[in-house]
Image (cartoon, rainbow, N blue to C red):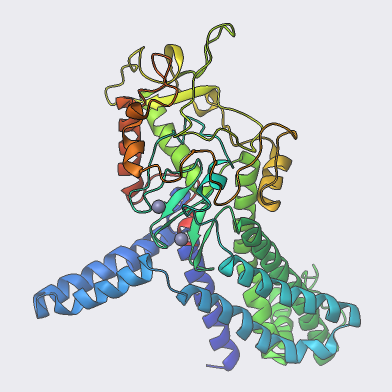
Length: 477
Ligand SMILES: [Zn+2]
Ligand SMILES: [Zn+2]
């Protein structure tokens, strides 16, 4: 087998593995070879190995292999980051020596910038604090977003970090810490994508998508020039001329690729990985447009199931009549000030039995209304595409007019919660803290329905292979 054939097979295998890893769990591809292969690699083969080992050694071999797999899948390690770096670097080492002398000065300058940027943003995305929540910066994280009483209810405490969970935050099971506006844990950067580094992650996707597009486009012009020069066939174009027979076209293409195997094979690799990178970028732009995160899109999918089952109910958070006392807020659980321009107007809860919650349950006024569709619920975190984008690109941007309170700073003693010392157990007994619980509902925060909703969500989040459309693309990233 010639070198070229081996290279092409290697490229196809790399592309296919990336494709399976990215898209193997997409529900849309459920009954396709990609999903079967994903199952084969992640479920069937490990299962078969385990069964054989149980027979032969009583499971001694697999207990160490199992530890290895647990480590690979659930621990923080840079294996995929190194793979990504190698793919970039080896590609450039193979491509540049042949291509560089043939490029115009403009393309050399543009090319140099295009090569450097993904490395820079990879470094920034991997090594910037993604928004780890600590006791010192907790008040600031609380001030970023109000609770929407839909995906995030006040009062939830992270059992590991022992901190009140700010709205939109999530505990990362790989990094073992809570992260503000957590999107997902990305193995390509070996870091969470969150409040602190999501802009770098997006720029990494954008510059990588650009690099593969630009590299492939330049590569194909070089391949064409080589083919034309080698065969003196001026009629050859990359877009097959209509009068040229297919065999002839492929032959010329092969001549062009073989002229410099490095340039040719990397051009092929860039062409084939390019759509995947753009698809991932497109998915993240879609999330920004929808004002949500990968993590939240899974929560919304959970709500969709509740709604289909008729177990989701909503009502107004404040009384309809403005003369009535508005809902009182417990500032030991909710931020007194956020930089977000909108406040929640509704509360959404689920019940186990499909009956509406009790009328007197804490939070909200009036009758509970069954919700059948996601369209009937507002997404508090969607304030329009450009503002959503600003929220990601400009850190700590204040969407509020000046003068409405002040943002808390790190180590802010008189911060949102008064005493930072507030023992975590206190959060569990919110009614005992009294915090303004004046309305019949306000203080007695321990709503059974809310708790059930939290528990149910916690249970669901552990369920593998959730039928969620959104978010799964990132399960592998
Ligand atoms: Zn945590
Ligand atoms: Zn993480």
